[in-house]
Amino acid sequence: MALRDSEDEEKWLQTSLRSWEWALKETEGLGFTLALENVFEHRPQILTKLLRQMDAERLRFCFDIGHCNIFSHLPMAEWIDELAPFSD
Image (cartoon, rainbow, N blue to C red; front, side, top):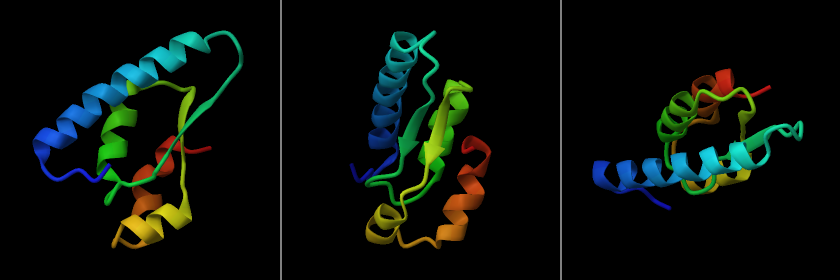
């Protein structure tokens, strides 16, 4: 989803928080690590905001180079620097 303004971003964030909270709860005790991947995002900060608010060790980030090249004009290094704390 291409986020056009702060209202869209906040709506996306709240919906995503609920989804990831549910997924983490449903997989608790199964030994799963869940990975959030960049898809349509134009910049990494919205994903960083989500991952910080979730503050869950089992929720990590998986960088998709192809999606970055298609949907973002930012250099890959900026994405990697921003999201490195959330990847293993």
